[in-house]
Image (cartoon, rainbow, N blue to C red):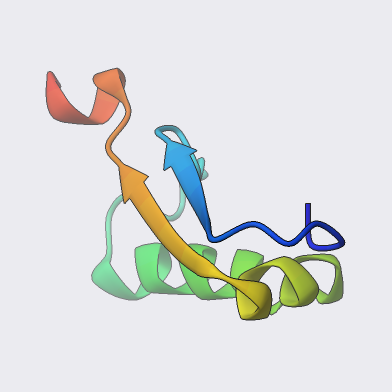
Length: 62
């Protein structure tokens, strides 16, 4: 997707999966989200266009 000239990326829920150790602390959740975004494979996509996301069904109804 980073190679295409898209205007934006729409993330349709369930974008980050927390591990069991992440659930109990704010720092664990922040770590998991920032870790995923720091991956070199994600950098081209994240820096290329605007990103919009919605919650997944499991996060909203839990």
